Image 1 (cartoon, rainbow, N blue to C red):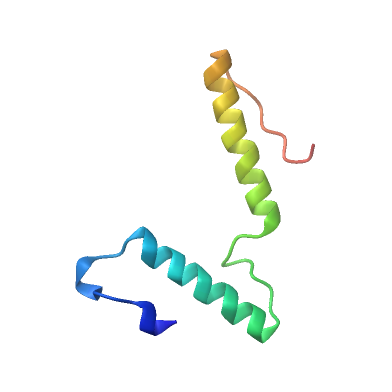
Image 2 (image 1 turned 45 degrees about the vertical axis):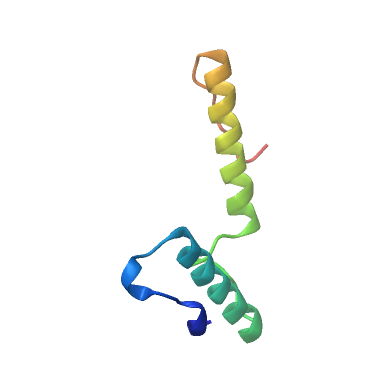
Length: 71
């Protein structure tokens, strides 16, 4: 994955984050290890979506909305 790191002097961008995440995932799959705790799990993604949905609902209703990741 190191060959995808182009123009290092330009700073760290979203593209670099994607490459780093992909490198982590591929490394873990190849080694047969868990992605977490360094990488996000499916549950992390699910909870993140609950939070984002609650933010949108809160903005639409004009009030606080509770997030319940166990539902």
